[in-house]
Amino acid sequence: MLAALAELDLPILRVVGEEATSHCFKHEERTGKADRHPSWACNTETGVFNCFSCGYRGSFVKLVSDVLDVDWDDAETWVRQRGGIERVNKILGRGQYLEDLLESQEVREYTEADLALYTLPPLEARRKRGLTKDACEKYGVLWDPERDMWITPIRDFTGKLLGWQEKNERHFKNRPYSVKKSQALFGFHVLPPGGTAIVVESPLDCPRIESVGVSGAVSSYGADISDIQMQMLFEHSELVIIARDNDRAGWKAAEAIKQRYRGMGRRIGFWNYTGSDAKDPGDQSGNEIRFGAGNYLSPLRVRFPK
Ligand SMILES: [Zn+2]
Image (tube, rainbow, N blue to C red; front, side, top):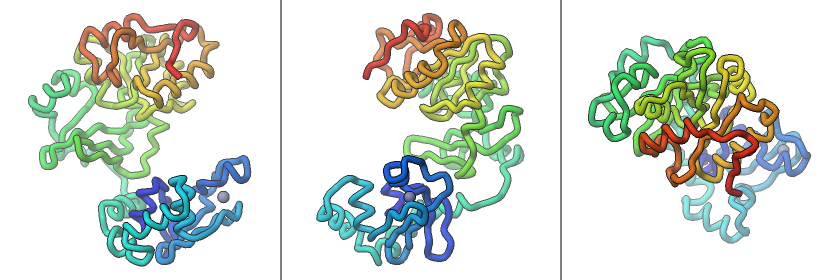
């Protein structure tokens, strides 16, 4: 059942007994306000769910139908394909997701000593992504030699370690699961004050940009940039260049930032993807990266595809 909920993209915040709790997915639609306290719970044995605040309740089939926006028959088929309500728990509940869930409830602190297990990324891995050794060292990018995974430490604005992300082609995970990335910027601790900051989405794009001779990249860990992240950047840097991914989510996020901070005038700019169809700066050639940063667009000039 927990795996089925994960498949529906409902982030389970906690499980107490048979109740899996999450933010109510219909709350905003029903009440006009997002569910700030997790008011929604699903019984992991029966699949029956209920929002204690707005009264959104029903059977698991109804939930599937609402979340996936499919009719009742298709929702029933979806549940049946997963072995039916009772069996979903037994069959799917034991996978990777359960591990994630247990991790999400862990309370242990991640310390610098944990990072001692990791090494500098090997030449072959660095070559594939076009990363120099110096750039990896500068950003503290590490490698798990046991599992062939990139390790990118997550630090708060003072440099204190909060956890890390681990990834390779098949696997991606935050440690701890619930690490607060909106209150951190990857690379902020090595960002020189008073210069230019370039805010990319993915941490590994920072050493990539550095590797072709452009300094100042930091990562917001995803398309959205929080108010705290922007505030820290404006306080620290003369110019903030927003480099969102060159895709729908990236354009949407960039447009929102443009609307919000257009009054900042010359202090904010946007990555220039002109002539490139790369999906993000990490995917670009050295020349494209230097062009994207060097010819950044002002809020007045930049246009994003709809
Ligand atoms: Zn609700």
